[in-house]
Image (cartoon, rainbow, N blue to C red; front, side, top):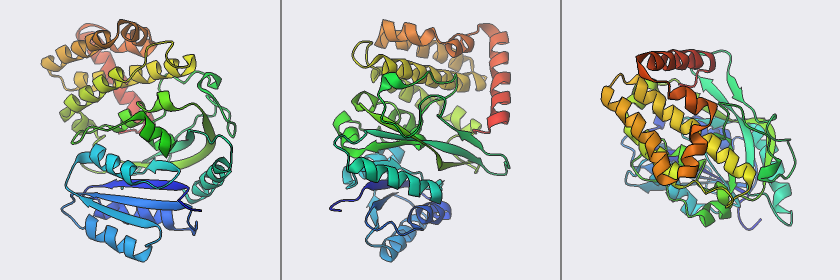
Length: 342
């Protein structure tokens, strides 16, 4: 083929410990010229850049390395999208990996789409919370939301569960769609994967679900951005991403009803997640910031703000007073223990 079928983008900052596992999972099998792997060394100060160059020298037809000054996760993803040659594109964080059997299934599916008159804009796959030290891994599946192996429109999707949403790990976009959306992730900002999983959706016309646990999301290492204490310290960045998501939300009637319904669902979840960490901080100034966050939704759009507030989880997170905050903290601890997401 003239260009790869699928580009994997690996944003990598000081990931020398994990980079080999990630790249190895993508290149272990011989997929010919079907894939390319772009490692974006985002100003690393450890051996990440050197190890990336070793991978490129071993597999020059597959692996490319881009060394850049540090721009943060969003800046590294932006660079990868600019450089991607594949028909489809998927971001894989350097401490995560993909399953070999699932990769074969994904490539077979994408090959069939490459030959189709109208290839799907988005492939959705399951993902695994692969928590360090946790024997039973939580798999996020979408079988109850969308039938597998069919070309779907947004109005074909069933309603998502109260805590179910399509994060970056579930998504493989057609590259042209991401570029058409004009998405540029903010630099030096954490949690931009929420925005990556949201802002391009109005440009997605068709999607397909493949019921396979493709992406392994590794959690539990020290200093990880999704650790509870880290998220509390960086809650201002969660607030920034939430505002950008609200501003990227289309008004009803501008997109299919199924897409608007899903985007309101996801925006509500993100608003709740941000609110939880504001509450977990035990900082009265953050309690006031939480109120401003919800008022900010109305500032962006009264209709969108109203629809987000109507969600059950939105009403639950806005329980008033110290009793409400106590119940929210307890609910978070129970959910984290069951799922192990942090």
